[in-house]
Image (cartoon, rainbow, N blue to C red; front, side, top):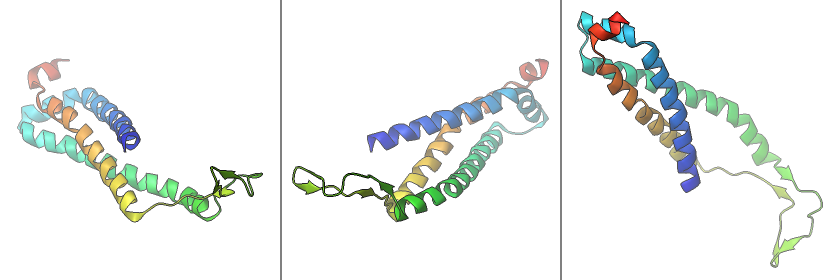
Length: 139
């Protein structure tokens, strides 16, 4: 669980970097939107919707890319040639390593990645809402 949590934090850091750079590059646009009359809370929602879309698209692409590999590894596995009849501490070693994924584990992983992505969008969203229109338009 600790390893999975650390992987989730690495993913969140990458998403945070992506969203924060997008916010910093569009600082002038956000200033104009605020000057025209968009409320800061709506700007927070706008940036959070962007992180929501990043989460959804990323999860869908991730599922599409990893499904064939999982099917292959669960069906055929990794053959460990030369280990037929081998044992470790009187426990026989299986000569083929196959993957197995439970539905509850898969759903927990997807939910955690989704949560980390949305959480990573909070700081850039708040930072975007605190842009002063005059200063951002000037630069």
